[in-house]
Length: 310
Ligand code: ADP
Ligand code: MG
Image (cartoon, rainbow, N blue to C red):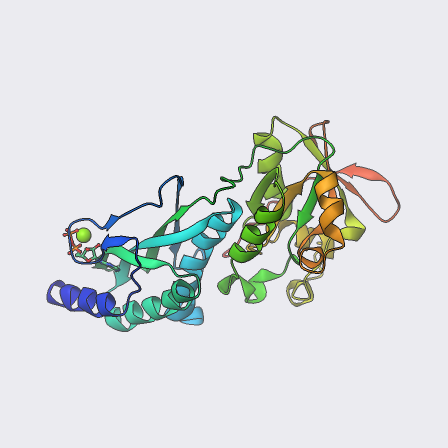
């Protein structure tokens, strides 16, 4: 890999997006980027490991590269931010090293081009272990500022931007980061709190409740949008469609917390109505509760299903 490393970096360099904010990209000891005056920077990192977050032999390197950047962009979307730059660190397996590296890059660039993200650097290693890829994305807030997890208040409306569950059937490899949806929404309304759904709505909404001062929530089972993929992952194991929707994870939709007045104003709008699916309300009593079809409200305990390889 020693000699190949530099050839590979050259290969990557000529195929990478730059941007007006990049004063020095790939090829120096550090990248130099110029932030937009008056904007705050957002920084997020996610690491994906073969056998844990994907299976390289099944998914192929392009899908892995796409997913690795996609999960980071989803975090930027969850802050209503604009992604600007990315760095990528890889531990490549010794077999098929270059083909894997090329595939990763091709998959990443599909998303980088679509969202105008500059690839400004990284680190390349090969070893006797499985593929590991870690991407860091730098983004910026808009003039409306970042949306945190901590701003939910009792009475606020809980929305999700799309159907949930069953991502393990294949969708988890193809996240569609809700960057544009978050930005357009934030340009027309304050958003009290937001998170991207990576571990399942039950768990991720739990982070909002905790960060917002140990609040609670009531979810209406009948309102949960269940993805058609759920039927592909259903087993006869007593796990209901709603459990799948609430806990499967890797949906990469957003959970959006809005003031009820703002929600009412936007719900009938043809642009925002379809991406604001109300599933419940924030409440002052701590804990997550589910109102089921018999109208009885019961505490909901997530079954702790966790991504892949379980
Ligand atoms: P250094 O020894 O200073 O860390 P490297 O030889 O690791 O430099 O990297 C040379 C340049 O290539 C740096 O700009 C680095 O950010 C970039 N780079 C290395 N690996 C990658 C990669 N996989 N993708 C993008 N840029 C990379
Ligand atoms: Mg290096």
